[in-house]
Length: 422
Ligand SMILES: *Cc1c(COP(=O)(O)O)cnc(C)c1O
Image 1 (cartoon, rainbow, N blue to C red):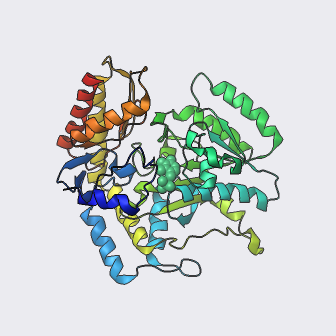
Image 2: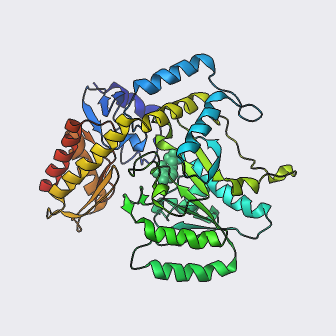
Image 3: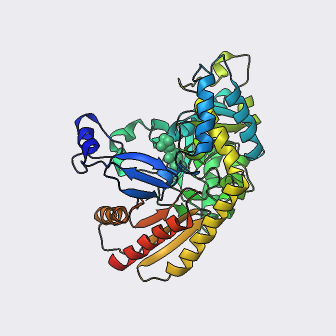
């Protein structure tokens, strides 16, 4: 009964996959709420909300109904020269909850393009002002996507070898801690004298792909303040952290210094359709506003501001701000805290961390080779009916806000069981 998995092998090439080493794909036939169903009828709790997208549960009726209605009205139209109600409403609703300095929205299709556009905004902002600034600044171990600009500003990956010669100019700084912040600021202060840094891109508070590495707001705030004094365009990549995951609407809400640009995707459309938005301040927008056509931002994707995706995003925004979802978020946060208290002193647990509904723990298993460990952990969870994707020795949970208590307990129990066998 593995019909789809067999057919898959013939023509499909999967992302982030070495097919010779990992030939088997699990065929998922249905998703509802926090549960995925495979073709053999097994159920898995989606402990990572399908890469942090389906935060209101899969196939959420509220979202489906709104999108279905929109489908009868307007499916797709060019967004250059034309506009439409779903995009306009979305801009109005999103601006209400974004940091108050954000004024303009630029649409694209995914997290990588959202950051790519943020980078272009920073580079062209200075180009338009005739500043000679061509270097981007980024955190070590950051992740911003897989297109060239996004890949360039991401922390160096062992998989980037074939492309590194083609990267844009990027310099990296460490994520701030209480111990290194003074050094970072001194070094930066000196570096900024060369006047060639165009922008700084960062994942605020939580670095997702770096295994949910967390830093606090104070150090980042001081870095942002210094960079903004020097007219460096600050770009918050909130593709992962956006829309409630940190306990507030955006991670940037914890910071005094608001970014010039914000990148959004993933939960933006609640896991229904791919879309992204790069927002910016009036200051950034004004640098492109000119009688000279060439000063415009000449970037555009075919499906820019797709009306269906905008409608899904509007429904998601309404859900996010509902009392019910806000209560769900508070419950998940409290529940993770209780779980953390119960396991943080376990001999197999090295460290734990939490930011909003994002919970991570590092296993204390230093001698093991991570690759093999990761595969064993993954299999353990799947056999338990729990879908988690451990990163190295880190196990993390980022489940839909709507996950039930029983489902959450099942994830916790499976993690507890893992601690007894590693
Ligand atoms: C996922 C992610 C991206 C890339 O988004 P895609 O939609 O996969 O291109 C960029 N930045 C962050 C922080 C992400 O988590």
